[in-house]
Length: 505
Image (tube, rainbow, N blue to C red; front, side, top):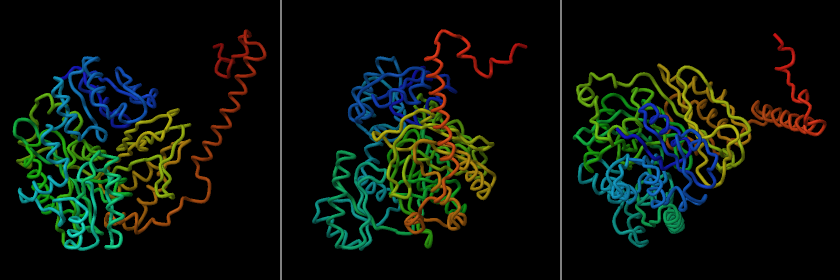
């Protein structure tokens, strides 16, 4: 087992990895940019090292600086988290070339699945169902002809990367040229690769993904599914497991396809195979593979009892998956129990096209109850800047039934106090309360269909009142401190507070 790991990430996932390492008695090294000098992940790690300016390419995307930091601090391995360089094959290879361990798959596997065009071709070869589409020459003329053949509506997607960047839904031929140009620009800016592919757009689909674990000893298993249909701008905001759509037969069929997809690229470590499922026909199609840890991994942990981050580390250190044979025999304690839901809490204005928000957290009070978990990357006093993703935290709940889990999440969000920065908490509550979600029938069109004109409540919510009181108290405290230092800074009674007075006993 490793003695020291450098975490090439920030925010809640860096904090999550640090906690997993603590349980394995592994020292952690955090990296940070100038903008993250006081960030939470730098304070909870065993050590932290500054690597560059706020711009991503000067810090969290700078391969040379990250590897140099790992060597300088005598780290043996690097965990990439998710986002940033986590699916960068060149980074994975550079880490290994430097004599360090990359906690993730081999560069070859990342490359094979990171290119969506190549991944579609590989899945087709291995008889994993793919969405009807086009993944050959990507000049505008070829793409235009392919779009006509596929038929509108279609989905334009970046061949590299993910997270909804470089993705456009095109409803008709008249929109195609503009969508293509816009998608190319965004793909180039986000991934340095302007190539595009096309897929038939399934407007009322369900987004189902399967968690994969694979070791270096030939074992590849899945740890069941996660439903991720609640999305805004093609990014997930509410996830749950098990999926309300799947029965045992369909679950087994898609799970087998997920394992086959991972084996097709000799996959090793944790990964996720994503599928689109047509709820009417129940046909399913390979969407993509995320060759890293997913944001929504905690709900799988809650229902299976498996710490996925720890197993990423164990597999990277050479350990076999201890429970693989029992899982195959279907008599494993890994059989999922109960229902889990995750809500992503963002600093954003949900009523204004989810525009990211900035500010300083005046207060942060997490909900506390049995079966409630909060993976947060911020705490009181932290600044939320324009430099990075506005994800603040993830609220995860576990209960014996789906209805109980929804109710528990509603209570948890009600009790979560984040003051000083606009968040999407009220929007999440509205989504959870909607009858379509309550029935388990929500598709990827859920937000567009039901919340296009959503507005927050007109009255001032309680957290805003609390923030106003805090500001007033802060002003009074500042004035009191000013009086104490101005009147007689040497008089000890000027600093006597209510706790000291009357405590002679």
